[in-house]
Every structure is written in C-alpha cells, then in structure tokens.
Length: 283
Image (cartoon, rainbow, N blue to C red; front, side, top):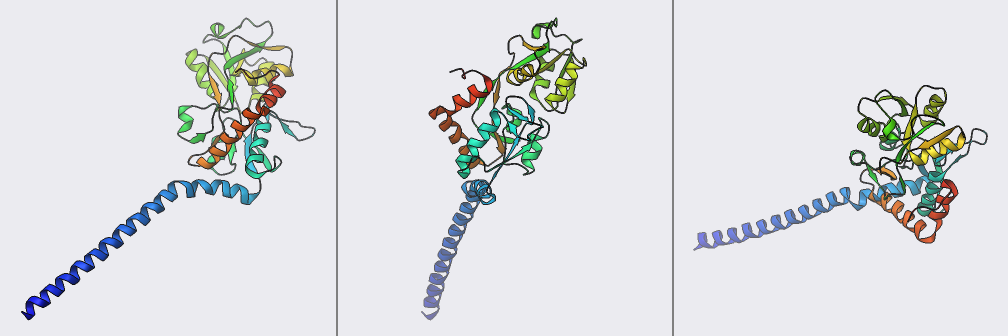
C-alpha cells in the first residue's frame, strides 16, 4: 500500500508539472506570436512616423529639373512645382507645419536607392506606379494621372508615335519607364539616355536626337520653356504617379493617402493642379 500511495502521489505531481509546463509553453507561444506580429505590423509601421516626428522634419525626394513638378530656381535656390506643393501638404498633415520639410534632389535613377538607403522618407517625383517597382517600394494612391508622349522641334516630320521608326533617335532619362515603353512600342529604336530631363532637353535642342519622350505633363513643362518645341500626338501609355515609401511603412502610406483624400475633398488639390498645369483635373 505504501508503494501504491507513493506511486499515486508521484503521478499526481508529474501531471501537475506537465500542466504547468504546457501552460507556460502556450503563454510563450502567444507572447512570441504577439512579438512577431508587432515586429511585422503596427509596432514597426509606427516607427517610421515616430522617427519623422522626432526629427521634426519630413525628408522628401523631388526632382530639381522638371518644370511644373519640381524645378530649382538657380537665382533664389527655391524648388517649386506641383510635387513640392503636395509634399508640403503631407508635411503639414504629419508635423502640423508645411515648412517642416527638407527637399532632396533625386533623379529617375537615384530615387529608389535613396529611399531604401534611408536618405529620404518618401519620393514625390513624377514616379509611375508599376508592378516591377512595387517589388521594391510601397506606393500611395495615384496623385497624378499622366501619359507618355513626344516632344519635338516645331516643323518636325514626327507628329506622333506612328512616325517613330528604328532609325529615329529618341532621347530620355535614365531609369524612367518611358525608355522601356518606347523600346517596346518601336523595337530596335535608338535611345540615348541622360541623367535628367534638362540634359535630355538640351541634347534635343543641340540636335543630338529627333524627339524626347517622357510623360506629357513633363513635356508640356519643357515646351513652356521654349516656344520652338511642341508636344505631338496622343499619349500612348497610362502613367499613374504615386508617392513611394519604403516597403512596410504602411503608416506613412496611410498618412499620405489621408492627405490626398483631404486635399481632394476640400478643393485644395484642384487649386494646386490648376496652379501648375493650367487647367482643372479631369473628373
């Protein structure tokens, strides 16, 4: 009987110990799951906004060479354009002050590397949303709708995409989707790529090419610089511009999307659009 009682007691103790261990295991599993969720979800997401607020200013990558969207005045040093006004509205949304912003120059080639290196918080620089780019960055909702076209010297035999052949020399900007698009539309076409659009436009005026291609909104800005050049033909692509942030920064995407929604609801977006593009956006 003594052995039997001892055995029973030992059995009870072992069962109790197993229950405690199982309970601890479940709690640890829950805690670990919660930690992973936090790391992959809100906790990590909120760090981006917290970092911006702690810094006290929003770092935005913008173009310095794109008239109407982001152009630096060499005399004053100021950068102005549609993208700049949108960036200021986002700074006001996040920090309460549209001037709590630092603009950093990007090009089509450098904008994603600078973003992912942490040099900037976001890219607001006539950047087309593509499936390929979505693998590298996260995008906001569309904030501007453009389409690719051609800029030529007035009197040029090129009046649209149908006039472009493999013997045509096209100018463009490195890293821009327009380079890929024109090569797909006209297989074998010769393309000269430049670091930015102003260099490409200078090359066009110097006779180094027959036409310059990019989004029509950018080309209209170039044409406004020199009445000897014009945008020809109908747009031949769909170019929805998005604001890019590092992947996973969903809180920053939300802040941007909330800003865009508010601007469109209160009429400020239409005012910014008309100010720079010269007409109200299509509804």
